Length: 258
Image (cartoon, rainbow, N blue to C red; front, side, top):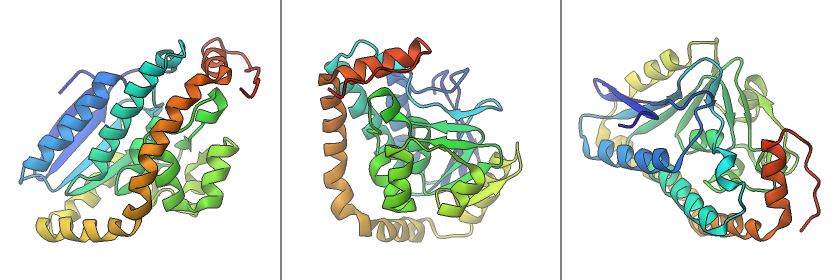
């Protein structure tokens, strides 16, 4: 456990709480730690499910801290895209059931971690977006693939290419989340669902999950490395540096499309 990811075990359920105020952003250390935590949980036969949520009342997670990318360093981009991908792919491959309790804003890598889970429960006030293109970047931790798989190509393009932010009710309507609950009750709802997993055979759940996800492996496995490669390629552009720094300086970006 690190100060940025809190882990609690309640019977067969592991609760992972992103704790990096004020917006529960991801850091390199936290991403590496997430991969380690999920790997350890995979080895714990007493754990059947995991629930991931954010600390506080406003943010599930705002994704990556854009200060990391402000320099335009391709080496940093390559390293971060790799650790992002490895962490969330490890979460996606968790042998049990993973549930995201979305208790607030889920933006960028914050939404991508929820997309890597099997099931998403959002609170009524939650909002979700993949706004990376607004700062000259792209979702590099499964977002382009997992979102399209869940909601279809059209809505994925609206969210990623047009920067559209969705409220919880619209997210439910298009299949981005499976349930919307009252403010403050997403963790309770996720735990109630996780308790149902206890009634299932862990071996059967693992096999069923693998079969359910098998249908998309043929294309997504080839697309994920390309996703990371294209993310790093963006650091050859002036737009990447301009987008990140404009955001950090609280001004509108001046795109040069190059």
